[in-house]
Amino acid sequence: MATRLDDQASRTESGKSDPGTGTLAKGLALLEAVAIGSQPLRFTDLLQSQPYPKATLHRLLKSLIEAEMVVYDVDQRTYHPGIRLIRLAHASWLRSSLADAARATLDQLALEIGETIHLAALDNGQVLYLDKRTAARPVTMFSSPGKVGPAHCTGVGKVMLAYLDEQALEHALERQSFHDYMPATLTTPRALRAEITAIRKLGYGFDREEHEPSIICIAVPILSSRKAMLGGLSVTSTTYVTDLEKLEGYAPRLKEAAAAIADEATIRMLPGT
Image 1: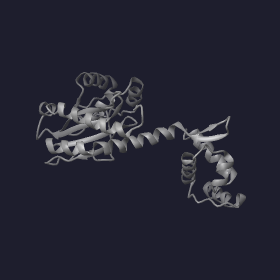
Image 2: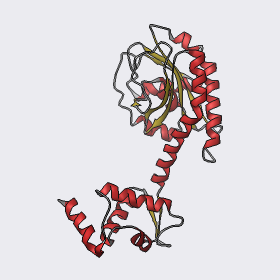
Image 3: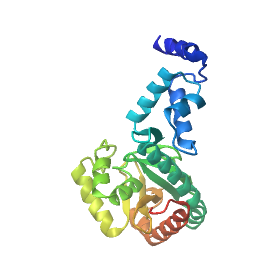
Image 4: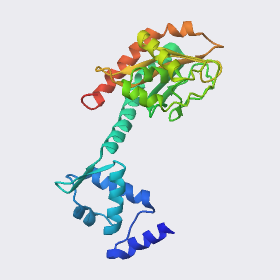
């Protein structure tokens, strides 16, 4: 009922019609106007360029400011893209850039090794699978591009956690379910931190059937020249085909591939990454 009344007000106040189908559509349209403006916009600028009446525009801007998607400059009386919007845009761009930068290396690695290759990023403490190359002898497993999985019990997740700074690591640990998928799953922050210490010493980590039965992997972080964590790379197989000792033999090649991806990705990324 509130939405209908709001839509009616949008049509009647100042004689303007609102093309949005709901609050989300209106907010996104307004956010886009602020984000792509050639210069910071005042309220009067938005009122003239947008189809919303004054009351609706005030309410939408207030919501966007509270969500840190837009910031209001009190001195200049202008609206700017907020830090949350910039962070989200950069994260999205980073991921797409990483997948694009890694494509050729993933293809070559898959040809050389013949096992499943995963490229992943960390998303709010969880593993976001960006790309995948299937093994010569395909194995059914959870992962696929676009899927989100746990970080505490996957090789690629643990190596990415290991190369976060302490504040980011603490934030990520708070978001782990520590669900005990398998007997080998690490189910406490203390156990995971001990694993992270070992990963930092070796420069790589493992999945020891911690998420799915028979699925094992070796994983390495993808780090920028400034040691910023960009993502993770893994070789995944099954205990029916190989073992952890054999997978560990891929560590040098996997590190080399991760460095090549990082070099290519750095060219596409913002200064200071």
